[in-house]
Length: 132
Image 1 (spheres, rainbow, N blue to C red):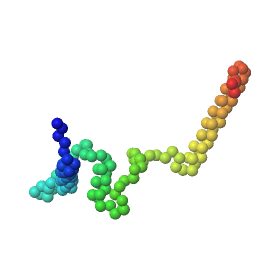
Image 2 (image 1 turned 120 degrees about the horizontal axis):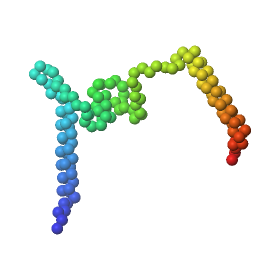
Image 3 (image 1 turned 135 degrees about the vertical axis):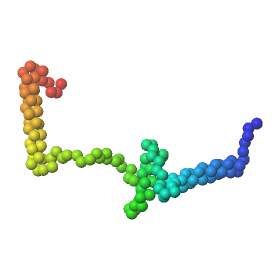
Image 4 (image 1 turned 90 degrees about the vertical axis):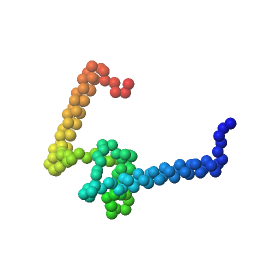
């Protein structure tokens, strides 16, 4: 014989379990929000390399604790750029831009001349078949 609970008893058990879980979450959040203070008034900080929860949750917690004046505390879902200091610009000044443009055009002309010579050589050897 199976142990079958009535719908009301099952609902009561589920509600009790959910209430216990929510109470435990509230206690954990309260403990996290109120760190322990020593006799001298210093706050003890525990360092850990791993952050409990996911990164977005941690950042959201940090944003809400810094009391920002901006409207929303949620971060955008766009990808973050990894920025590692100042990167030197190759063509900051106009003369550098002109030199870069001239160098690229010169490289393209050289490549074109090499291709022309290659096609000419293939034509002489009768190996040039562009549409076959």
